[in-house]
Image (cartoon, rainbow, N blue to C red; front, side):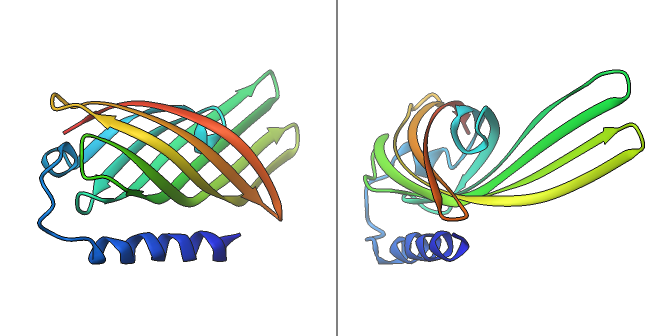
Length: 164
């Protein structure tokens, strides 16, 4: 799982240096940062995410999501930390892309005399489409494949954000 994600990330980053540098400027060049929320996606329910473009075709991303609840003597918290990269195929405002990375999951619970925490991770790969408007509004739709211990699960993600 981690090996597959690592190979995909290295491939995406190496493609960034092969593409011609004289490509016309896109909004990803002019507005290289974005922040927003993804419903569904890498963290199952939602993710607050930030992405920084390295050039017009490659971006690195990180996010966070937390789910929790509790009662009188019981508390549970699950925190997701997805990190990865994206490769955009077209140097225009709207472009298909591939993405890959890993989500680190920390689950903790406090129930009576028990206070435990466990950390796990799963990989993800995805294929999607992004439109980044000149004024900064950003929309992304992605079909993710979540990979863990030889299992594969397809899960959608819809992202809305602001580029700056």
